[in-house]
Length: 243
Image (cartoon, rainbow, N blue to C red):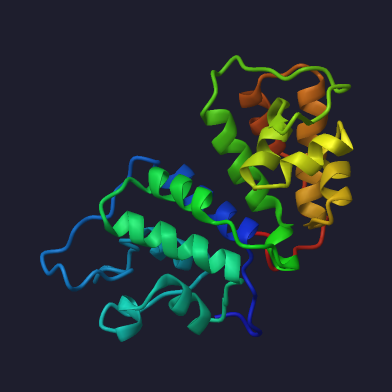
């Protein structure tokens, strides 16, 4: 549990969910227990058994298998353990949780939950750290051919509401305002996020800068992700939403 509550926003929670999918696979399903009325986040071995159990595990949260909290909603559990959710993040958590418990693959559950989350942003919903950037970059690259490359740097990240290039797709995955982004015509991700009022940690900015430079040199999206992951970060301050 953090020493002070850490408010989880939409983009941060989505990044953490994407990380879970990267590690466990998008085709993972929640194993149905023998007792269908009892679906704990953690099993008796202490290992997470549900989608949001992995979120708790990554946040260094743990629930005793016999705890009644083990059965509460994801938003309630996270709040109790010191990670309250914004309204938008709570909807994302609830939708993904319900779909995964209904037997949907975790990848489809998260994708559909994102589409169903239409609440207005709070400032915390547009805050991202390096882990979110890397998780979403990895997700986008994995869903395109290994040889995929981007247009030249001079091409705007959004055109008529549609993303162009790897970093345009990253912004779209984070549900950035695509119409506004198209009107701005920014060709660099850091400029676009800044113009739209998003908050990036220094570590997230460093990872994005590396990705932009490698992408502009014509590297494949797969190679962009590999080199972005190797960005030196130890000299930069770590924000609570960096992991």
